[in-house]
Picture (cartoon, rainbow, N blue to C red):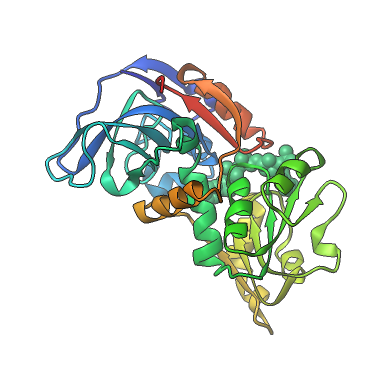
Length: 326
Ligand SMILES: NC(=O)c1ccc[n+]([C@@H]2O[C@H](COP(=O)([O-])OP(=O)(O)OC[C@H]3O[C@@H](n4cnc5c(N)ncnc54)[C@H](OP(=O)(O)O)[C@@H]3O)[C@@H](O)[C@H]2O)c1
């Protein structure tokens, strides 16, 4: 089978399209013929081995443990191991294989059944490939870490990228009053996704406009931890998913300062792929509450270009890799 392979950490230049052996499913695995995948920040972090702690998270200290990247997959079940009871050959599935060996930038991949869910008929493979990692990240950040509730004021900082476009829609599905923060050219898109208010970060600093929010979901950009605190209402929660590394270090090291003398909370987290949340997202999709915004499409041979595009930091929604004809 064809796969986009790398054997040393580096830029997208180290990726090579190669003919490799088709994997065989273990007893607990599903073999999937991949129709589409999509790129995430996860892919370029694991490609470069940066930040360094990613290497300590089981991806290989000196060289990559897994030679094929690609967390998101959508495709058809080709074969199943003897202990697999949820899927059969021919089933259409989608999922996030970042926790089970990665490998989505290939014609076939093996995955544990908990990493997969049934793809609704109304969802195309490219839509299904855009959803898993980014939408589940947004869901877990807003619902599980942020405890989002109907009527709350929620702000999504970085509302126009992969995670942010889903976060806006998911926050609306939970009936929050949503403010999206993005640059000028993406304001209309964020409004169309359902945001009640949109702030252009090139013209206005939301941490200085006197507004306060019950939940701030930080996906992109940078604000100091004290600026976020200022923009939170009493008992407000700042949930940190991504953005500049300085934000992450501040959230980890300055937590006591953040909580000092008040009820405000800061939470950072790493999303955990799982079947239940994929099914939750599939239901939101079927109910018309969540859609995938697809920025660009690339063939498998152009994964390096797709990753370069994402690394520039200005993608509009998701960037999809098309691998087999639907
Ligand atoms: N915690 C987790 O488990 C987890 C999981 C997935 C991702 N992440 C992290 O989440 C972050 C976002 O991932 P992603 O896939 O959504 O990235 P992405 O698609 O590459 O995000 C691109 C978007 O970021 C926006 N952006 C850039 N600078 C900004 C700024 N200063 N203020 C507001 N928006 C800005 C861009 O809008 P403009 O072009 O308009 O600037 C663009 O639309 C990454 O840091 C990633 O590592 C974390």
